[in-house]
Image 1: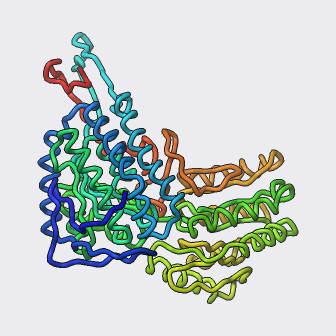
Image 2: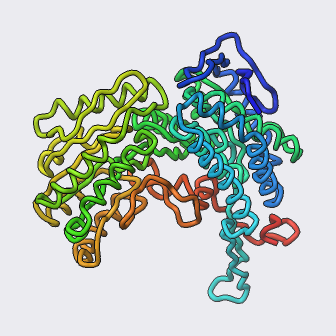
Image 3: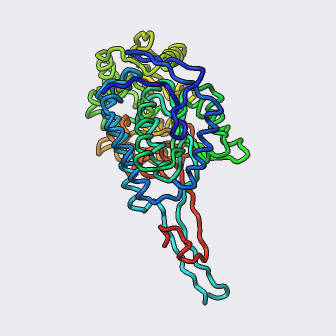
Length: 504
């Protein structure tokens, strides 16, 4: 099955073109023209989403679960074509896209199963106590209800799992919230074919067409119009700190402020404890190199910083990392803009006297090669620019004098998606010393692993303190993600016949 994009927006069941177009910039294969989004299209999509909410927001859990399963089935029916266009646009290998497609359909089905169970509703009931003194208690029941239409911004680095039908969309639809997606211009064809799958599922399930819309391209005014539209009640975003913060500020400055759930990036520090380093410094270095360069380092959970105590074990670790990186050739990055940002980040490290170059390679065009640097704890704490996300295969080793110095450095880190402890049994006292700090700094703390790869499951947290995300109490991966698009409602002294079905 092949796919040739038609380049139109999906607005509440209608494929809509436009006078102005932009041309895709694939890593390989043919380029295609796509209609540019407009403020008028945003207004149409949001109005339709609000209209859809009056039916979809009050639909049964089974109806919504069947819809999520149908989307997953329609995506799988287009599997070959999705892989083809996705690989052309992003340069990602076919195996990676096939795995990501499985993750995408898997999380759709996970949310379907989750809402069928009903536990997410957090049902509570305090029966009336009419004889209580000095005052009687009324009958009070509580359940979670959907908040209304949600805006979702597609991510550049995950064209499937964090984009058109990704985790934000799946969680919002599961909650009962219609979705308006702002497609990412790095993979518009992939966004279009996934939108076709959602459109087919809407029709097969006989739902209001306003339950989903996709708006392609567009300038900054399109994103601004989307997050400020009065019908939108929350925003899901995965992207840069600068872009996310600008949208966050817009959400906060609305006449009716709304929550902005932004995942904005992280350097995901690893802490290499003494016994683990003595036992397996070389293996840790090889493992880090593999994680650092996976997908050209274009993961939000890429472990960009390794913290280790100065000494011969750290020398061994660095040598092993260096040797492993030498075997990694240039990799295609997602866009020309991301490739340029990676080169700029590399330049930022090389212009600092406190940073030593361990292994550097040139990168040109849309390709990136790995780079490795080292510095000290004092230098790092004095230069906040060293803590910026490189978003590419760039690693920084920070040498410290002791575990106490390691703890001091950890307290100086900004919020992170992940933090990792590499330890053996003999490192338990040091790990206990660090853990309270890392819990405050990260949404997910790992032991003896690498953070690239986020399991989609009930217990996963993909979020963390700012600037890793804009809401430290939320996650964008796992079933808890549905909580972002729900709010509690209490029902006092209701006759049973008037109660929502799930409270009866």
